[in-house]
Image (cartoon, rainbow, N blue to C red):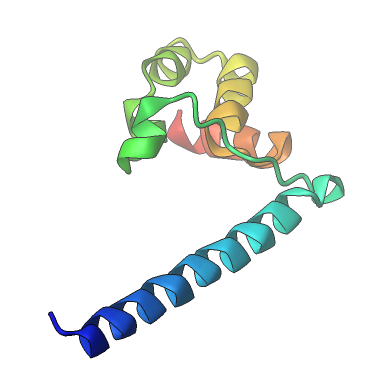
Length: 96
């Protein structure tokens, strides 16, 4: 690469880094609206980080659904997805 290409690449990388920072701030702002029932999902679950659908691969949630334990399953669903409890309960009922 010549010097001009390096400068262009550096400028694009800097622009992308700035955009990621801006988007991260926006997402954090959305999660700060707790009165809307929006909760940040747990990143402790490795499936969330891998891009797999955490609802499909969470063994604990699937077991609770098989046992028809709606309340515990809804709480687990909230932990996985970060949605509000009412939305989680409705989703669990749909899965059962």
